[in-house]
Image 1 (cartoon, rainbow, N blue to C red):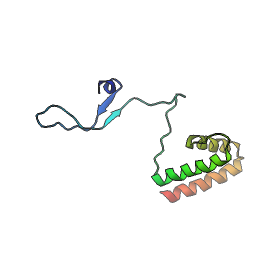
Image 2 (image 1 turned 30 degrees about the horizontal axis):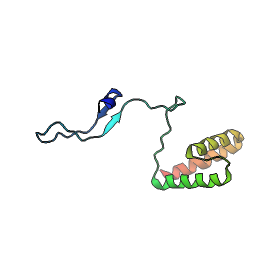
Image 3 (image 1 turned 90 degrees about the vertical axis):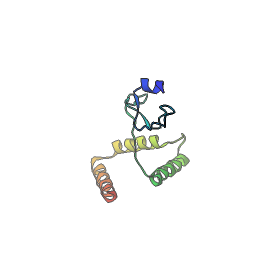
Length: 106
């Protein structure tokens, strides 16, 4: 536990046991800002298991056409590369469609 405390960890929930000592049960969090090897924070996506499974299936479909192993991160980078290559009018149409799907989700 002392290693975690040195890294800025704190226990957010604790329960003191009956007169047997100060054993605590809780959740430990680290306040240190996490960065990847590229010195940027990781992209955290909150998704349902159904959405995560759909993305995994899409990655598997892409793997059938790719010479290299695809991953969800590579899929996102490929989408960004495609976005950068679209012409402005096509990008505007795509953004409008995406906004429509996002509005349906909320």
